[in-house]
Length: 255
Image 1 (cartoon, rainbow, N blue to C red):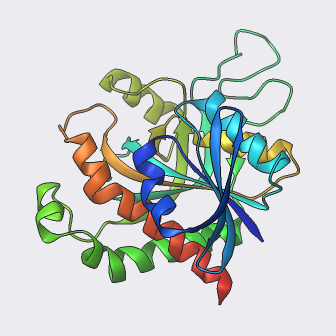
Image 2: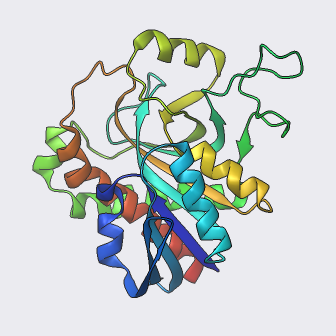
């Protein structure tokens, strides 16, 4: 199996780039693809940049140019469900585009992708189970070794909780409490919001239902009620969570 791994920001893929064995790089679509192996698996790692279009273009290149069999998107997200705390992990069991709304037209409902007839893009249940197990294994066994007690204390993190559930994607940075409250009411069970995952999932669905796994680390509440030193969090905490969970997921396929 060949895995395509992508993240939206340089900090989200840096640790993985350092950890994998890179055989060669390929320049395509204004992106650099790192082709190699990691924990016994073929991987292609790439920075997608931010937003749904950027993520969709990158995913299509991974599928068409590199022939990957499983796409993994990882990075940070804003927590929408009130139980989520900074450092917690969310793995998408369903993904939705929260800014898609063709409902003024009589044929469509809010959030539905026009002419595709889908609102939610569901994750493969077996792969979801593997990803959740990998996340729990990393957070309990390796996270305390990788992230210093000082860094964990700075963000109020002990052992991150791991959730699977609904993730919403849209081309807007969610910072308005009224907007997030409305989304929470309109999408029951919504856990977090970000800007890429559902686009990745849609491309994978349309390209033959290729498995797509979206792994997110909560960096803040999407209403920004809690101030977080974002870059410090990504560099000292999030990159270890995202990279470590992906590593454990890949390692599970080697056993």
